[in-house]
Image (cartoon, rainbow, N blue to C red; front, top):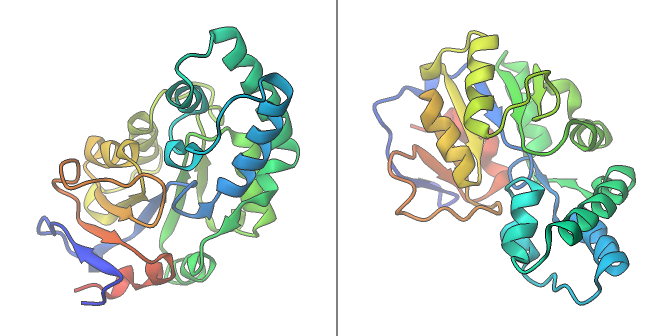
Length: 232
């Protein structure tokens, strides 16, 4: 097998039945770190320049409140909220546009689309910057639905709820659907909805073997994403 892939557990599933793919955004479709660093640096400079950003990359993935609380547990709620306000204003305006698609992702989406595979985005990122990123990268049109916590009236509180929403709303058959993501939240969402899980091992989540029991495949090189259809 190509060294870009490593096998975890096949679970008796048949890849040739694949009809739907649910993608995480940050760390799966796009490298969002440059924009997050830009805007969080802007916020920190305005609110508290002593805050350290050196470990930012390892904290990307969860909702912002959780991310900032994990990075700076000593922050008061008021100071954390001020950082959040400054970050969001800058990120929604300009920071999000520093995101880039991972190599091979646009080509993979084009191929999946040509084969009639339905594609979805499931992200913790708010709707406005999510749409802005995908539109800027000319990827928005590939997706049947782009789901953020605030893009529906009854906002979901975790990705498991989001995955179940997509399954029900679009009548997706679990055995024909893959969820691709890089984080533990993505893995939990796949399990909650009974979906095959494809780990984007090149992303931010860095799942370890203790958390990946039942994982189907892990992909180490985003340029090989389209090859999911060739896996045997």
